Image (cartoon, rainbow, N blue to C red; front, side, top):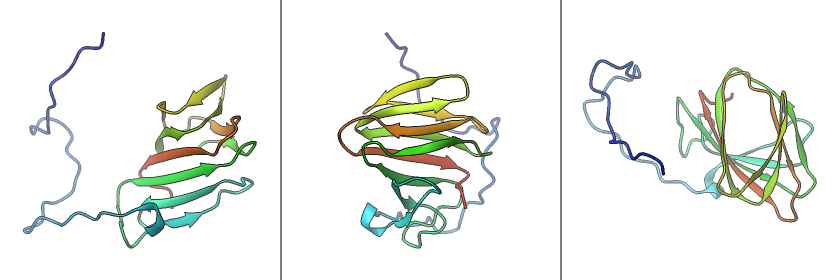
Length: 141
């Protein structure tokens, strides 16, 4: 059984993100996927939607990117790597991820943390659209 830990915010001794506190607290931005910015990946027939991302005026995050990636059956995003950290959250479907040393089956409910420069690609090996929430920090251009 996993040990439950107590949430702890920044207390001052940790590295705090260098974001100055505004005089007036900002308002949240609540968006849906239809308000995102579509993006295609080279050589891939899947479609991404930049929902929270610097290029989306509806939710122009500065330090993170949230993309919903739709991968039809049999479609592959070829392996590659980049300097940003990412996490893939499998929301629907199943597939196979290719890494530098291995391939792994992924399915709904899996979180896949990808450190900087981790080689990774994904293929929909199922029969329904694979839906992946890609969280990137900092966001890709």
